[in-house]
Length: 252
Image (cartoon, rainbow, N blue to C red; front, top):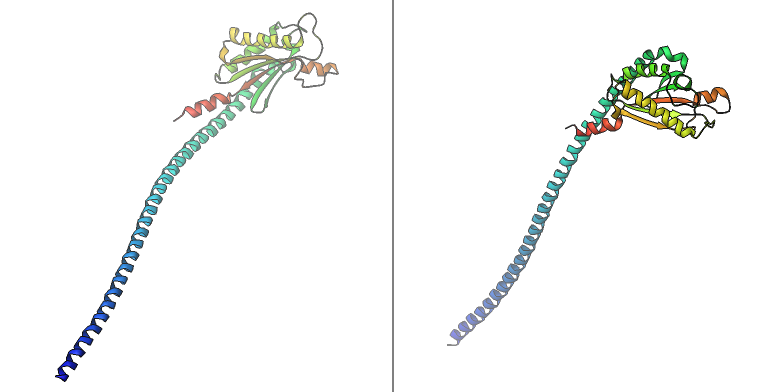
């Protein structure tokens, strides 16, 4: 009997000990599970964050790609326009050289009368001395002046896209009567424009007249030779770069 009681007691103790051990393992397993669940949640959050970063990066990449393609297209368009401008300017430069030579040939018979043809700043200048063009203090053109303008107009009409600027100039000597130097220089330029348009058929939309009076001297006004050089009418042939640029921008 005593032996049976000892066995039962041993079984109870064993069961209690086993129960304690299982409880510890269970709690440990639960704790480990909770930890894993927490880690899994953290990893899921990290994955979600990374996915959002990837999505944002893809959106930015698409935006940058679109912007780059737009910039590239604009650059190509600018390069094409620049190439067109360069080509046009090169052709215009050759044309201006050609025009200068033709004017020199057309006006060579008037060289001894104070006619000078030269290039300056991309334009062609035809300088006509007062002695050829007018009597002193007058805005009425002489016959020889009209002949010279006729030769000039023949060349101008071959090149209808050139802009023609006529500028009158005087010396510092006061003009007799009520007209001042500025008015005289302006009216002289107006007279040249009228002859070119009315008598020789130069398109009036190409013509600009102006007077600078005594304010654009090319020589000293302190001696007769200098004053004679300052009394002149200048005809400036301009390739009209504004028109060239406008036509280039309109090209597609």
